[in-house]
Length: 387
Image (cartoon, rainbow, N blue to C red; front, side, top):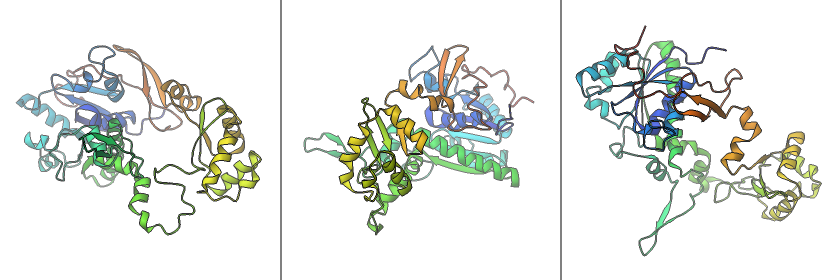
């Protein structure tokens, strides 16, 4: 098996709940040696989000795989001393604490740079470490609400009505902001490690979950931000809801399932029209609403699998719509790509992970270490990083 991409990179993760843990998980999955520093009572993520067995929530099992756990009290002299030794011996510090927490503990950016000049210090939080809202403690709903994922209007009687996002397809699920922030932070950390390897210098990275979620939805947002500047809309499939148009939408199939149809490019549209015997539609404009009835009729003539067979055989832009987790996890393509990984935890038992969004040297996620017990590796790191 090839050496993991980040093998030999030492990471200290000082974070609670989802956002910081996601950063550490991504780095650990890529091969980094990630030590999760927890308070003596443990990260709340172990206990607050349901239990497979006591202390092992699904979130903990997923996000803290491939890590080791050390417990210490950073407010106590011995705990602070051990934390400093860990940071001094690391290449990366993932700081998922509330902004300013490490400063209060005497670990300002200047002090960290003196302790470890090559340190890549990444703070990741809901609103970021700078700006008017930086002092506010945040969770996922707050991050998504800030960037328009949960637009609301207040009714005359004081009620709230949630509207559709204005052309910006930003998910309103709180966890998505944490995932977006984790991916953004991991990417920037990896870039900083490349520069560190070339120049020997560290880096200070400040990632906001709200910023990351907005950036993750950049295309519909950019179209809305510049809608008055678009002079030619004849080739524009995106309508007011951000994802519509007769050649870019979902259609029901003969077996009461659905497919996603995205024949935007002229060549794919023409290929589809010929394959279904509707050459008369080839010259229709992408935004022609009159296409919807005939396309609805065409898609109702075959089952979902028959459409997939045609798409594979003829190179047509049609894909399946999966609506339940059983359908998603049972999809042959996703399984073959290693999106789901079945494992067996020594304490929690059988567990299904969501893997990495990519194959490295044709290999999917390897769970080298199961999510650790609280303080499981205290003895290993009693004096800092082991030789």
